[in-house]
Image (tube, one colour):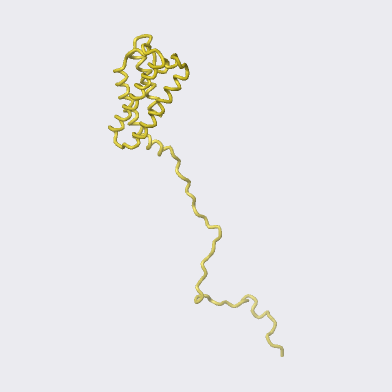
Length: 170
């Protein structure tokens, strides 16, 4: 999701910092074109499709430099494709200039994506609560029987010895 977001931010920065007054972003140009609001939807769908492909490539890489290059190329592909689509849908002259600056911003955005992919797993692990650990408790406390050979046979009634009726009658 960072690829389309950073592409829009890079395009807005291009318009704000590098374009002459009157320059428009790709979303503005597409929105004022022949398709109207549907032109913006076309640009957003294009950005999401490219982002899915770039995301798959990014997840295959583990090192920082390849992720940086893939992220920068992905943001540049979204910005370039949106510029071409916006020029087709709307007035290409309204886009203005600042394309070299846009490439530098895409390179910076690729670095942001690479660093986010390196830091995100650690952040997710730190935010994930630990699983509750259940302690087993004894519902029925069953004592182990004593071995048969060790049982001591006690008299049945030691406290009342001699109080019973006589065993024989005379």
